[in-house]
Image 1 (cartoon, one colour):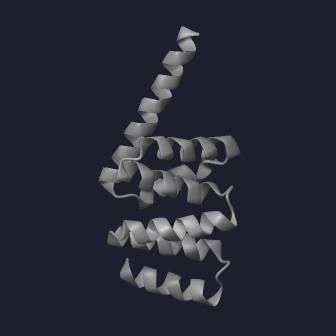
Image 2 (cartoon, helix red, strand yellow; image 1 turned 90 degrees about the vertical axis):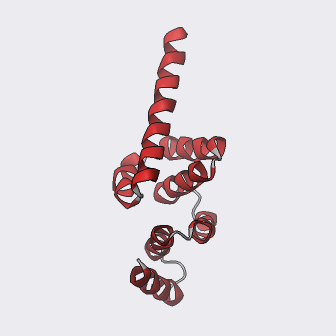
Length: 121
């Protein structure tokens, strides 16, 4: 992960508008356990393009990991509203096992809650 981070950082230095390199850099920071740094980098990328599902989904995980369930929910709602949920499955491969389970459990719980509320209506 450290080598990937160094390469991605170099690519970001060469072209600061390269979103793919920023995401790669954030993923490497996450893998290294530098969650706060990954969070800051993703927020910077999001400020340039607030409608990017891959960035929003990664931020959602980091918010859930920090215990900010409401914020994580809002980010996931944005991903769904944008309609580009295709980024979720590949991102799950990047997440550490404990975080993947956290995201899966959270999404499953939210989906069941939504379904139960619709049945009541």
